Length: 384
Image (cartoon, rainbow, N blue to C red):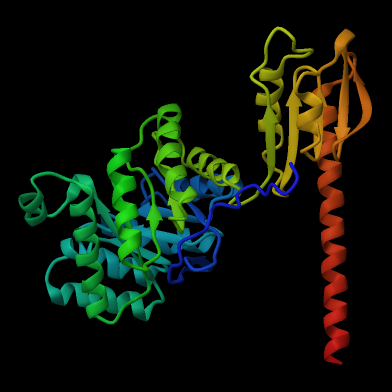
């Protein structure tokens, strides 16, 4: 292990930085996690409740669809009641984009090419500029322009990139540069190739995603392959995992992808074995329960749950806390890679582990607060 540094091979692509409300996108900002609501945006109460669940899961940015006046009318209340920037998803109706900007949307997701005449595009850009909105150019393989389909015969990476650059030029011609781009496809190979090509020819921040990825399980696998490839290559400034599942599930998967690549850290990362006949306790059930019980933890922490002593001690060396199954119902608890105490069969394993995690997190947070206070005091003395 000497000299080994995980994630040392990921060098992020250099892109311009823009802002979606308070969230920086691009440059040296962390890769942000997005989702989209599936409630009627006109139902402000239901939409707010869904956004709050995503906030608990750790979402950075949330997109809502604004197909009609009722939706943009509800937007002001939604923006006021949530704690994350809201992106208004606009298609065809330029007035909806202007209404959304006035209502407080932090970003407008549009295709400048389907907004209408040059004058209408100018009005949308002016509204974005006046109300401090950024814009996402959202290109999709399923809705490419007719002239590109005629040119290329079918959706492909070249067509997606050409569409994106055409739309970018429209905004640049209006001296508007606060925008990011996505070139999504449901085909993993097409999407990855398009993003790779686009990343090489521009410095615009990129919103990455595999669109219409599918169900929770299949979509998670598909998105992990596509987004994992891009992020490993340093491509991607903000991301959405598109699942046929509740929005908060998209957020959790997005975070798991980022944590697996060491790009961001949040909450408890559980390292667990697949279980076998050697296990000293029910690993699968224990891990599933712990995932639910520890969702409230935001402080980064690693926890190994291993059923037997074959790999358990080794994994515990590399995690903050660990539990290894033992014989006769006696399991070993590790702290900072060292044996700490035994957990007997009669004890409630779940409650004990949750208590240990919460105690460790409280200690980490207290040390962090003390460090911040010391730094403030030092800065005050230096400035005196």
